[in-house]
Image (tube, rainbow, N blue to C red):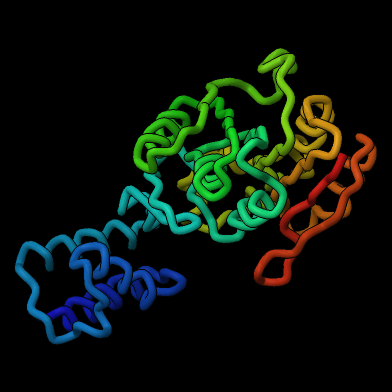
Length: 272
């Protein structure tokens, strides 16, 4: 059995399961098992054990389990992160928050990330800027991944297990930059989740009936901890820009909407 034949088998399994991009995902499965680009190495021989692993992974993916959960890790901003059931999968559009941190944060900046999940945002910010970085995560499974990812990336990030909606948490501390990718899907959007996304924790997705619950809560609480001249940047759903901008302006921040790499509204950036 050669890599090209195994690739065709994996594509067939994924296509029959109506996976959105079977060619890409089959290629990623082959790359994960062999460490090789399957297109460049189509004629390379595979062991029977490797072929069985490829078919097993493709079969799991065909049931709808996200590829990232099957692999157990995924890349974000060029760094590896453990992921699995109970934690949100890092997405490329969220990297925009790290880009913003690189623009505004320095080594002596105090930075906090709210609703940290896997820790991909605060860990990447720490590694890219050297800033004094803290992350807060409430749920046990996600917090476990956060701690593992700090160790994996050898990042000096303070991980706090707690509720970002609790006004007593870290009371008295102040920050130069606040970041968050909170749950922001609406009730209607939750009904129409893609099969893969439905495997991710609802607590990391559902933002209340209108998707704005967390913005309405965290911005008034945490803007009080923001130093003058500091920034408050949150990821948003593509239709929520004006609503979140208005919440920031109600809390005396000068706000702007920033588009992602696809040209969609993705971040609202507030300045104090």
